[in-house]
Image 1: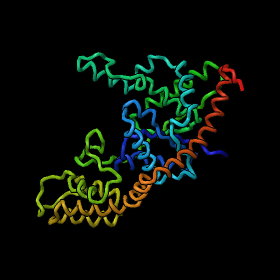
Image 2 (image 1 turned 180 degrees about the vertical axis):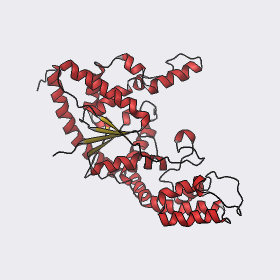
Image 3 (image 1 turned 30 degrees about the vertical axis):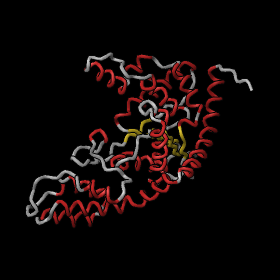
Length: 335
């Protein structure tokens, strides 16, 4: 029996941080054990925000290197660039004909930008491009083109998948048959809260992240800046309320956690000691991935070979789907 298909879209937005790894990358890679997993780099989605040529190229290589370094096996899973699959954009045009403008008006990203403009007494559509407005249609094309059964997403992306389902159902209803499989969201309800350097959730928005592939010196320097309370060395401390210890638990064994927790509770421990302990276990965990990342970023030709091979396989799947859809909607194929 064929495995169900999972599809993960990855927008190139720079080096991932620890929160990205435990909250999104690791869970998405684990799907390869159960599903026929496909991963694509959403470079055209990134174009909505990134207009610098070199920056987009660097981040595209970077996201590929990151996922390969974290364990994505191109021999077992499909990885490709969105921009290499021209069928995606043909399907996006098809889907646009079945997508109500009112549905796009309700998209969270668009509404947030309109609200921001309104609060500044600016034109509601100031600096809003059509790429942002029609983002959900292109996302639907990414998903529906590959007959995806499940799409791993965060709770904040749930609306986009609901829109994908709405669009697919509109097409199916019009032609009175299932042209598209309705994908299901796979939301990581059990994903743990990854604390940032200031105690809030780790996020680029808060500028409180620890990037995964920092060199050892930069990694240690960043860890030493983690916010702690003002207790003195002599005072007993609560490990469970400490940002350092909360991060330590992600990288250490139960035995290591107990040993460090005992030092917290006994008193006589400086926070700098705990931070050094965090650096040691985090660096040991990240070092193999950092070395792979550095290798791929120094040998981008290797990335290109992997993406080229993946895109070739992805296009074979996409071409069959588009040929089927053209026939079903009445587009004449002249060969």
